[in-house]
Length: 248
Length: 85
Length: 197
Ligand SMILES: Cc1cc2nc3c(=O)[nH]c(=O)nc-3n(C[C@H](O)[C@H](O)[C@H](O)COP(=O)(O)OP(=O)(O)OC[C@H]3O[C@@H](n4cnc5c(N)ncnc54)[C@H](O)[C@@H]3O)c2cc1C
Ligand SMILES: [Zn+2]
Image 1: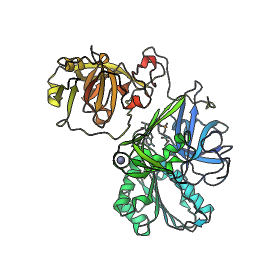
Image 2: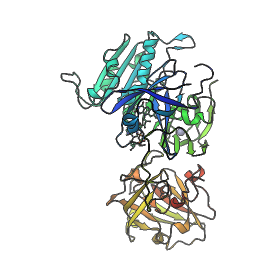
Image 3: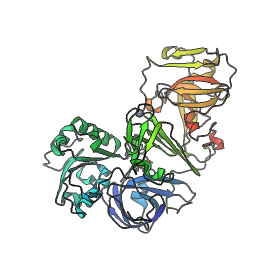
Image 4: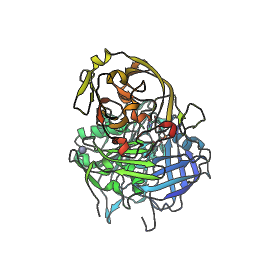
């Protein structure tokens, strides 16, 4: 990040484009003058203000990575939610909202640190919209031509619930993607529909013996289950970074 | 919001008080002595407050109350906070 | 004020004479969680009142249920802006529990399992204004809503209705509890919008 970038200042984002991702989610591309780029995995705070001055603030991971003032968010609608239905259903191109960031220096992956290329294996595990910061890491990996082996285990309810589906169905070189469907799998899919288990992690994730850096993101319950299973499989807890989105 | 999130979520609210990214700082819990990066703490989010708890013993490390015109932060649950330079 | 988001109104804040200022009406019962939910077995549960003279009056779960039980029908108002009308509870009035308590202190600190505290003037607990409640909507009170039993003081913001209540300690001065130390109002009248101090 260059000098003069102020992550702590509220900036104005203008909606440049929206893309339907799933039946309940979409991505939102914002032009945010002064954003100045972000590291893969960071998030932003979004603040909405009603006409009477009432405000609501929520955090959203950033799907884009690298330099520039164009920011991509992807939001899943919680039907009873206050903010997500507005972002998914109401926001249109040209609308403005307030955004603060990029934020957080912990749940991030960088292709190099202090000039040294990061070559260690990276295991990404996402549930639902928890794919958002992981996609930023995948994009950063591709853009930098990194040779670090990447694996993604992506858990979604049904094939129609996958965010960034096209991008992940034809993954770039150096990335392996495993899909885990929890409610309905495509016809003939080898793995029956069901929640991610210790056996799935054992079969599809980099083993603990390779000491991969592990990033787990999604609803709180999902992250909790996966993180516990990883520790059970011998992964060093300090190599597992988590981003819980809330919910049960 | 039901269920806690990770200390990462504090990056925005704490940027109003600190110049650096406090979520990468480590803190020691007064109750159990556990030392952890703040990003690893458990955060319970309520509309006007963030309750930060120790990942090891559940005790309160920090409380941030956000009122319309001020932010109040209570740090009694931490023995110290260490920032990488 | 920041820029206004076109078409965003947030949760509707309607005008209704029964709704304190700044509140919205909800049908469900939002759970606020400031921490993990303690699980307390009613066999181990105990409620006590401790006075300035060191006297401790205590009730086991069974003894509490031998006392007269009130049906309470009331509106509740949470500082996080939701209100819920016509909630129904069952519990024991604090008038009953204080009947044999000798005290001249005017303030009370409520203590909960799990370590929370909140302060209340004694006058706000007496004269049919407060209960130890253990049933909500005809069912045993859920742990996430404060079960086995919580304090119920409907005329104050709901954080004063301490979940997982364990005991009351008399105080001669009004000292702040957990939330009050962190900027919440010492009294918390929803009609005066006493949210923060
Ligand atoms: C660091 C961080 C990054 C995040 N990134 C993203 C992201 O990239 N995309 C995204 O869609 N969301 C993300 N979230 C979640 C987001 O911040 C909001 O919590 C979510 O959009 C719901 O807000 P709401 O106002 O619609 O719901 P609220 O009005 O806050 O809540 C409505 C109801 O939904 C429940 N609830 C709240 N959150 C969840 C949840 N995550 N899952 C299930 N139930 C829930 C609540 O208990 C409540 O009953 C992130 C959260 C964090 C902390
Ligand atoms: Zn601790």
